[in-house]
Image: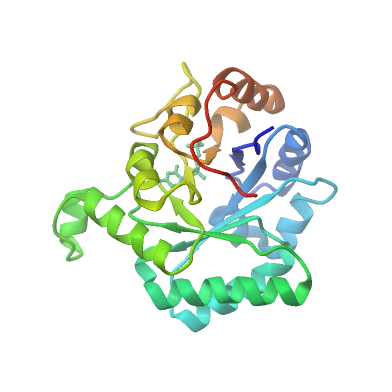
Length: 247
Ligand code: C5P
């Protein structure tokens, strides 16, 4: 059986709620994603508290972007949480990304745990061509996405986070082993919320995604576990996996 691709985004500052969701999703989801909102409110101790008593893999989405020494220190500081996945901004450059990978490797070895897989954010999907031009990056957004994804790959990162609309071209660019993590995924018929261009889980996986990030369609459901199960059962079961996931 292939690895469960579904990571559920717990975007909340409510620790008991995050913990209840993690417990409900244990054994159903492939993991949970905790990001800046939760982390700024509760820190590493909060992450441990939210995931206490559950064996769900953690996607720690803190999107590091700083000088290499500082990012390496942040990656080392996160290692005791044993995240399965972590994010950095590819725009931080090759040395920063290499420092992140080296830190993840050495600290995991020191702790005797499996190292976090590092995935790069290329161009935030909130930015369009005009936004990029305003920060001195002319040309189509896709060119910049591909450039930064290639740089991340060369720097030794395990993959990228991208829009499902970029998944196919990045799968072709990066090859079968890269992790391709896609948010902006909605079950057929679900509300798009503020996601502008959504695709279904099946479409994202068919395009080359190895991991799906889904938040509100699951966390706001009356029965989050049932919502997650429905996504996995009805949307992904017949999809051939184009790349390996995280094993
Ligand atoms: O609730 P929803 O399914 O829209 O949550 C998607 C998650 O993926 C959120 O944590 C959001 O921050 C994240 N994300 C996104 N779009 C991106 C990058 C990350 O929606 N381009």
